[in-house]
Length: 332
Image 1 (cartoon, rainbow, N blue to C red):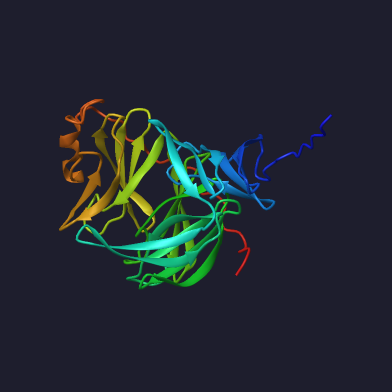
Image 2 (cartoon, rainbow, N blue to C red):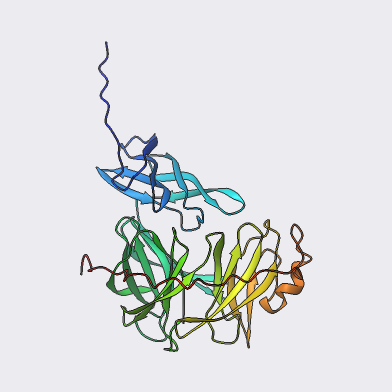
């Protein structure tokens, strides 16, 4: 009779089970694990090392890896609210970072900047090193480490480790939230409580952290932009059950005001926010127009109540500020 050897697979981050779905000719295995804090994530087991696969677009803390071929291409699904499952394709063998130059709505060039470990995922972009630059923050999906990469002339010119944050805190965006014009800060949210925390960053270091309050988890961050006025970094939330929008004005690391924007059918998804000279902000929502016109446009979107419907403002809780989230840096 043939002898079968069984090897138990347990992702070290799993708290509630590990499932293996596929293996390629190189012995690389993909599947999913469940964690009480971070939900369901995919994993890659290669050379005895587990790597988390968590699609950055997933809003329901659910990513599943179902298949892998010999080229290292992984396919699976991630889940968003409220419109369900989406497929993804990820190449796990390179970890390469590429920048594309865009001018006049055309890609005018491309530059390869190097490779980054597959456990590091992009968390946001901003002026983290000095004013007037565009830098990239990455987050380690297994340790919670935060790393900033300085980018100049399409090259990574430096990297700095900023500390670690618990895995139940996720980066939701970046903007100029503090009192230092031109500097970019990180906004993080607790996936269990809905709490928001701002991290001030200067010269590639986290210089302060401020607790803003909590919002129910049925309100998800839709984006950041100058909604209240030119140069502002305001946070727009959307209710995953009703489609309602709420904007929070942020200044000096404080939420200074909240306003309802209206309601859009849940079959419409926000594509992003961008500054629109001289003083407005635009939102890409399928066929949506300027934020200043958002309320008037909602009634014609279809699949949801009109914008004039009354909406209850979502007040941030007066919770006691959280304990400091940063721990001792794990590497230089």
